[in-house]
Length: 148
Image (cartoon, rainbow, N blue to C red; front, side, top):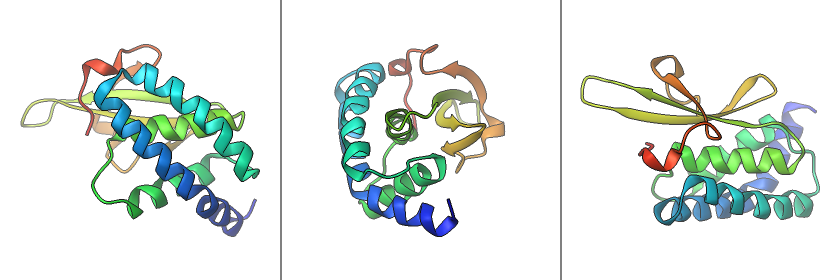
């Protein structure tokens, strides 16, 4: 698919992605990341069916960035990671939510990102090399950490 094709599909996917980001952000305040992910997976299947287009890493990356940038406030990296992973998985793609920690000068920071097909789809807007990987969401109970 060409870059313009990816951009076009990302624009089409941006509004439903924005709704998923709202659900993820609100859900992470009330329930565990694992339960939020379960709900997002169900919703993402409908989104992918309705948009009926090819959904891959570049499309999801563009949709998450576009949706996140269009909404006021900020969503956590975990919310964005869960949404991206749900969309990729709904389209039949592999997606791994990775978690890492850093100890900057003032305390402790946690970060999450999504890898698919050998590259980082979302979450590489931070310097990933500063984070010590903890594992995947399946390995770590993400509800025990606060993500920026």
